[in-house]
Length: 294
Image 1 (spheres, rainbow, N blue to C red):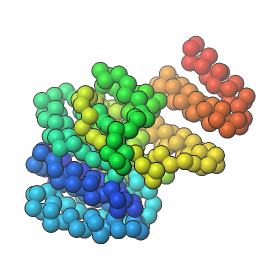
Image 2 (cartoon, helix red, strand yellow):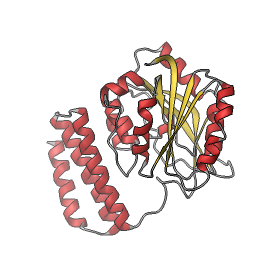
Image 3 (spheres, rainbow, N blue to C red):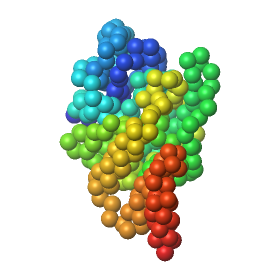
């Protein structure tokens, strides 16, 4: 049963004993009064669970619902799937376990969606910081903040995918995923969360940095990978985008061509980086560009 005005915060966590405390503190520090925190532990082997358990009384005192789900280690998308059946909110956010929310991050997003019912989702800007709390260099494009149809902007990395910046309407999200189950993938969860939603629904932007992204060496998305790992990651992303295309029921020839071009461009970037099958990939990319022009 959905509760009007409630914001469901679902966060997967794995071995984040150093960072889970500040993230939970940032949720507790929100100015918005209606939040449920659903923390899904993805088989942590450090003190993450112990720290998470220690927050139960603090969430109770704050008047926020707090649930911890225990699961064997798989990946973030699988962990989110275990949290979705527990969601009761009208709105949904899924911040990373090592990031932080500014104190009015939730309130400003909910307020925007109430005042602008013509929009189906809202996002804010982000800032980056390192372990010394110094500002760090951004590694995502901001893009055109006036755009409200973001499917291809997100797919092509013309704008940011930063998960904690986005707030979706739960009813609309689960209309896409009625089984409350997103496609599971070892390459992450944000494409599954965002792309089908952005294909069908609109998103506006609050031009304020209300979400902090922590930069550290242990981050899954930023760690260095071998050539073999990068190649496997490339294949998994292609497989995931094919699955998402099916979820979106993409039939437009022009949109299909753009997705093919996206795949070839990624293959070209990989080939150029590792000098592997470069000529063959370049030929395919050029052929695709000509077809797209025609």
